[in-house]
Amino acid sequence: MGKRINPADLEPLVGTLYPPPFNAPCLARERRKLGDAAGLTQFGINLVRLPPGSWSSQRHWHHKSDEFVFILEGEATLVTDDGPEVLKPGEAAGFKAGERNGHCLQNRSDADLVYLEIGTRIADDGGEYSDIDMTFEMTDGITYRRRDGTPYPKTERRGPR
Image (cartoon, rainbow, N blue to C red; front, side, top):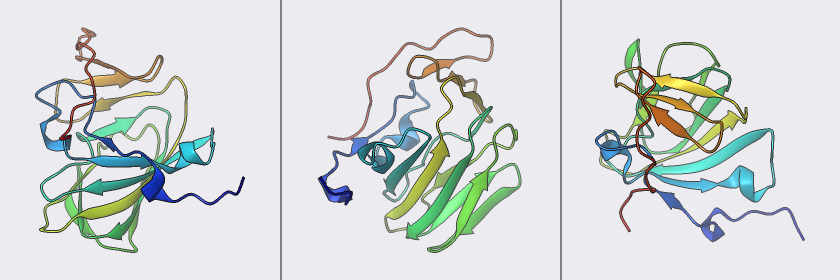
């Protein structure tokens, strides 16, 4: 079997596992797991499509995993503690593990945004959301909790069908 991966052949994951109401801006997010298709275990690579008005995630940071994004098509608005900044095709941004400056990409344009999302796979990673009452743990899948430790109910992936 060859190593070639055609993203169009991969089933897209549409939506998010976030509990309501935090899921709303991410419902149309579409990910194709290129790293999984390649059998990679040390880092993940996703091809992500955000329609206009969609967000990549709630603004978050990871305790142990690094993340990197590379813009392929469209215009991304990167939102961090430093405020919004625009990323265009060919531009990138990286997020070091443990830096408490939460980040997310938002599509504030009229066209789809397409980018690569790359991150290390640390089994017992976790993190926090900067603007909402939520944290996450990556111990058995993903678990979302309030800052006081109370878990949010597990949810099915939500998105348009």
